[in-house]
Image (cartoon, rainbow, N blue to C red):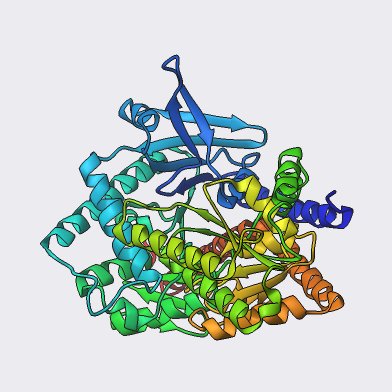
Length: 536
């Protein structure tokens, strides 16, 4: 059951969001843009187009503002249904419960979209920002890469064109909220054509490296990304570290810009962007409601057949940045050093296939399978397998696993935030100990209640597993309760609230500057009259 205290906090957050949404959005046109939209459209057996809402806290958070603004969400046309809507130059209204969006799709040539998404966005930008390049070998910026960059630029231009069309159609001032790394060049295309009363923000959902790593990208590409982002009014990151890194990157690569480290601003071409840290989170009430459902309860019962006296759980997409193999190596080292855990401790790993069309991801899945097979062969027997591997995208099963875990292992090489850590401590029924990588964005909020490890330190991770397995129950309970309270206080509602609050501050500042300018103009006019130079 969801506790009344948690529901009370959730209601307070919703009330705060309602107030700020009404103040900021009631008389404004809200536009959200992201590569993947909140809804995908497919044709059913009758040939009719049907929508299916996508997962994610961003959609949930944005849904909360629907009663104050009917947001227009602009996204890439990915499915056949999306493209049919886009080719007809139509928008579609999505309404379900309290969720309400008007959706427009950007339809790109298939090859152009492939270059934009599969050549630049993922292998180049995603790998760069997750420190995943093997610098002696990758990246290789070839003529093909430069052509793909032109496609990335073109898709960003298409987004900008539709956004500008939406701005021009509305009689209200517009607030435009861009999302993530696929749309880095949209801001530079919008700014020269936006009316002065528009607000442009951009939130980056992945890590932002420092200057040394960005220097691996050719200077023209690097400068275009950074200078484009400086056309925003507000630029958001998950953590204060990523925010500082952006300012340092601007210092290094935009010598003509003025960087104010105290105010966290960058001024370029007489325009100032305010940077900020907005740690994204989860819909606490929604996830607890799901955790209490019959479906999750049934999965929980089935999983009990696989657990040991104590159970380690991890849930990840299958991608190299998640550091899954080192996690298994740490568990192998634990069983070797502490034989008493053999036959008693189980490791349940729930892995969601991701980007298997990319060679590096295919190889990494093979490495995972080899690591698991080796551990089970070396330490298992006919009655006990140390590792149980579950492959597939099953969110309800993952929630059930986190409920019964004694330890939740989250050890990515780097992550923008990592919501699994927040979900796990929220739904845990066993006061699970969180082992958390110091390179996960979540460590800024959750580090004091977790056992923090270096992602490359296999022995250190093993020692943390041992510490967690031996931790007294009262210590586990104290840590778990602290972690739950942190997540509840800073849920996804507050992530959106903080952004709208800063937009409100920006609008208030503009109003004050406009009044000051008007007063100055009046004073100058009076001076002209006093000096006898006013027009007859």
